[in-house]
Image (cartoon, each protein chain N blue to C red):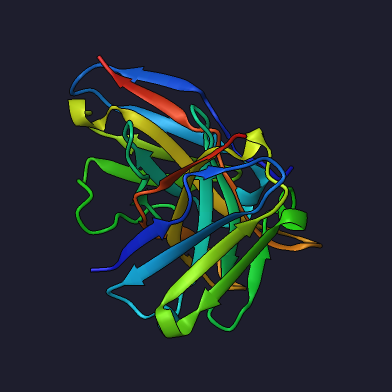
Length: 123
Length: 110
């Protein structure tokens, strides 16, 4: 069974960098699939942040691209998110997920999700 | 346009049928997926590739798509189906591949 678990600080100060890690168990991230970060501000909808393949092929949400870095650590079967220059608007539940996507194909879906981690941006 | 549009809220009587729709230009080229999110929980995939159900999803959930509109239908809605539902598809433009989510539809089962 594929399981994902987000870890990282629950509180980040404004202008600093938010860093989260997603640990994957039950599946090797080098075996295929993209891996993604998605967030949800309180009371709001889902917002895709970024996706990565184990060969470092990356996709970014254009609205966040200038502040976001997604990376993969194959030795630890993890992938990570860094979001810099955060403001209160970045306060959200951050989810990591496995992403079924292939360039040239019509499909796109997130089949396994972590439980989510709440990150609050506040001084 | 690079967005997916959903009705904010829909209600259905217990045991009746409800359709939740999603509109967007990306749906002319790419498949829709649907997620169910109950309060305080992570989203769960209920429909992928426009009309397929993952293992474990009840067969009262079905998906369809035509033109720029995708839908998820719940036939015989149950109390446990009360949740937020989000559509999703990929998109592509000059800056690369992206993912779009609809704004979500809150389903109330009366």
